[in-house]
Amino acid sequence: MAEAVFMQMVVRAGLQNEIEVDSAGTGDWHIGERPHHGTLEILARNGVPTGSRARQIHIRDLEEFDTIVVMDDSNGANVASLGNSHARVVRLLDLVPEIEDKQVPDPYFTGDFDGVYNLVQRGCAALLEQIRAGHTLIQQK
Image (cartoon, rainbow, N blue to C red):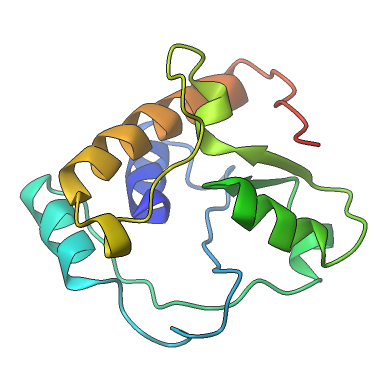
């Protein structure tokens, strides 16, 4: 969901040739699959195109990308377990100070695709704003 939302924002800002957007899970259980039907429904309702398929994060991603955005502490720990990285690792909602709970819940388990979409929208907007302003993103520990 976050990949599709952020990509749409990047394209609308005319930055698709400057910002690479990719998505990878920390587990291998959905490799090659399309997003969950609930995600596809909420994206379609909001006019957000998606064509991606799931892949698992690789250690090379830690070197190829400047920033790795995770949805929660568990994702962050899984990324950290891959080893040292030159990439900054940041939770998406760390970029939205007014949101108290910094964990993006997994709608696969909660069923709240609308609520997660709203959180992702806010986080992605803040991420794009930070990038456009040239700010160094928060380094998660």
